[in-house]
Image (cartoon, rainbow, N blue to C red):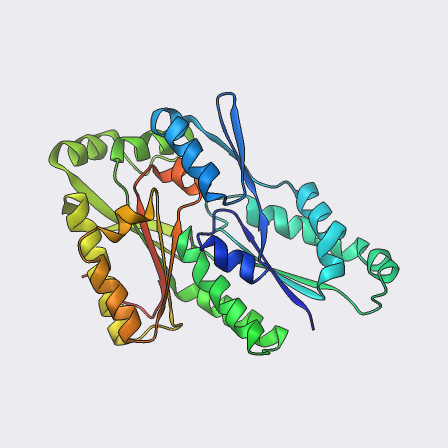
Length: 313
């Protein structure tokens, strides 16, 4: 059976990995004033757009996900012929309408695919499963890597589906933002009151950085530390501890809102890389998507992995 994997462009994974495994992207369009860019995870275009626009007006950006009709057209135009079963893994439904759009599109796709497949010489049925990863950015990538691994190992559709749905419940995403004023301005622009003015002002004045935890569709602070480097080092240390105690998949995904050389230079990151190597864990590093950067600001760090219940500390 030919199994396809589809993700939205907010999912942070290395471009080489996406291309090598024929992962299909649902691009998200970003508009800042008159500047418009469809986020196809092109690193050069993302960095160019970032340096030109995001620092000044990124919080004003409008992010436009693929519509129901665009998702339907993508599947009927290509995917129902290229694959027999497709897993569409989306950013958490609590933060984006992409999951709902994909679910709505799936009904039309399953109603309309038969003549298209028959014309291409495929008489077998086509199936589609939309899965809410219940997480964001690098943490989305954990399930995608597992789907690729299981597909390569010859797992059945049912085995892959059950595994991905299980992982969605146990994936943890942690983020340290650089600029709380930016995060607050962006939250206000989207009608999200989770970052108050007082906390942003105090955090900036005292150089206090929160560590935000994404899990099962919810995001909340789990620590507040003085200094960005102190906060990221604590995050890396906690990740190393989880690696040492055992992850549910041999995967850690990391994304950064800027040049990866800056990520590599952060205190504690070399130890994280060494821990991954010592315990047989694959470390996937990527430039954060443009979609991610306009939502959380330049220079943010996100780490994602799958593990059982634990405390940050």
